[in-house]
Image 1: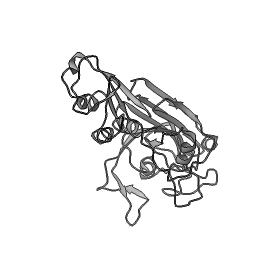
Image 2: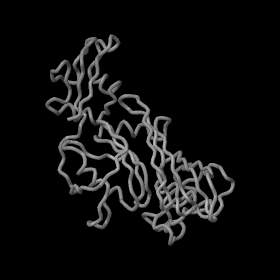
Image 3: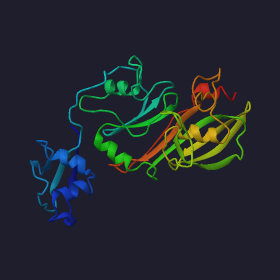
Image 4: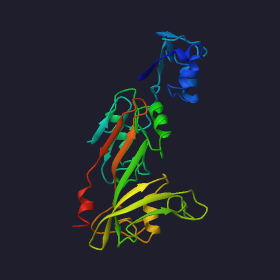
Length: 291
């Protein structure tokens, strides 16, 4: 099971170990309650202790932060996965088109979660930090435990987590650059489709034109918030739905999905502080729309 270790400093002398666990070790109150029940959940210098244990400088604190063994509700399915980054806590996968991240209403349809269940070793489970629509291609960040997931969730929409997309939109977007600040909520009478509406959640998208060809605009999109279908809804709101977006625009014979690609992902690793940068080339079906 995944463990994290911390050496108590002089400033930690006299503190309860729970203060260090929830402080520099970044363990949530919920996970701490689980650690208290695990046989080796909280140890100091190799010995199991209560969360009220009083630390001395130099004490080595160890916590088991991996997921407990859970019954697998989904059947693992071996599939070819493009893993562009991986360490003991996180991985970044390059998702192909028309592969849903999670199970759908169709029990026969494969999904990325099943593929990762087959890929990860026993004791590790996929926790999706970022999510992509079924038709969207590109980079998706996955934590291997609930602990890693919680750490990355705290960094969403901060300078420690940056996402950049590429898209092809119908028509010539004007002005060439701008910010869409328009609240998004569910469309009336729908449990799936979203729209811009005054009572929706605050939603902001920055865009920049990279090229214009064939009556279409190739865009760089930067979501400043993370609403469902945000980039698709905001471009449709501007009057330039993404090419192939059957839900917010219209179908297209040249591409069978919305022309949206998670192109670049940059984040600070929550445990090492290392800056991780990943990039995925724009897929050929989107390039073909502009050729």
